[in-house]
Image 1 (tube, helix red, strand yellow):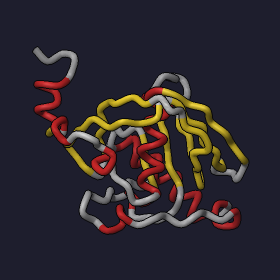
Image 2 (cartoon, rainbow, N blue to C red; image 1 turned 30 degrees about the vertical axis):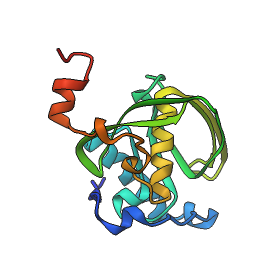
Image 3 (cartoon, rainbow, N blue to C red; image 1 turned 180 degrees about the vertical axis):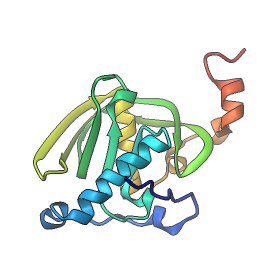
Image 4 (tube, rainbow, N blue to C red; image 1 turned 90 degrees about the horizontal axis):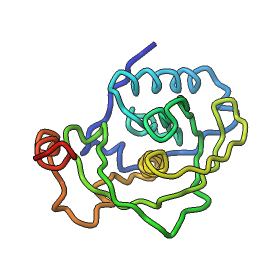
Length: 175
């Protein structure tokens, strides 16, 4: 088990396009260890998703914790070389944060429903048709693979806020 260092906004690794993972590399011990370490890192930082570039590895690997979304029993998804093959025209705007942009939140429009094709960590084809929060997480993490941060997707910067102010003024519990 290793907790990896998370790259913060401003680090050039977050702006590079990640490289596809070959079938041969996916079977290798270093890549399998990277996936295990990414899982440990995600749990350590209480995140809901993580992408290779965020841990200084420009590989097209993302993690999505389905238990954070509409599927509390869903567990961890490992997606290798994920591609959005379908996206609904309908969008939803909601709050996002990022382990690479700590303590900042902003409202981001995303497709309500998507279909993502990828490989699992064993190299098997997988297709996920998702909506809601899980779709948001997948789109956010796939963006990281293309060097895109959630700030780049915001259409109105007026919602950009620090975490304490988010809790004080923007959550449902705010007065």
